[in-house]
Length: 141
Image 1 (cartoon, rainbow, N blue to C red):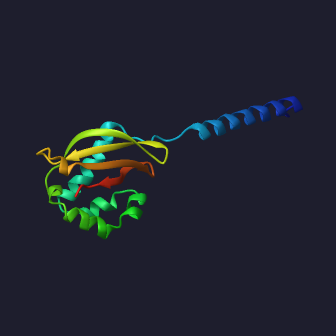
Image 2 (cartoon, rainbow, N blue to C red; image 1 turned 90 degrees about the horizontal axis):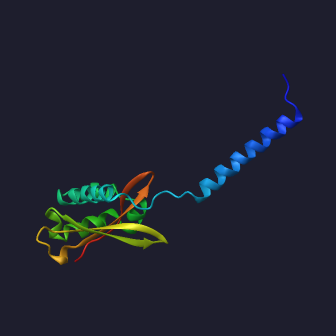
């Protein structure tokens, strides 16, 4: 059974239409730049728990490549050890939307249980290889 020239042309047109739709959709579709509130809190809480438990190397290992480039492991470990308030459980108290490289991102704020503003720790979560990870962390002095 052979296809007529008209049938072949119709198949080609349909295939091209499908290809164009897929190309346009993939161009406009962007992965989420912010996790859900709960997912982000869990990522940051796990990170801070490792820090509190004296495992800053493990906390650092679970961050994004960009975080690791910006702050090497030795510098991170020194920074953590020089902040005794990180040895106590940190409590989540707020989330903000910040813009980084023209993308909205979630910034989670945690602090020591006594509510001391000098312990307010700001952590931004980012997506890397399909996984939410700590992408930026600002510890107050």
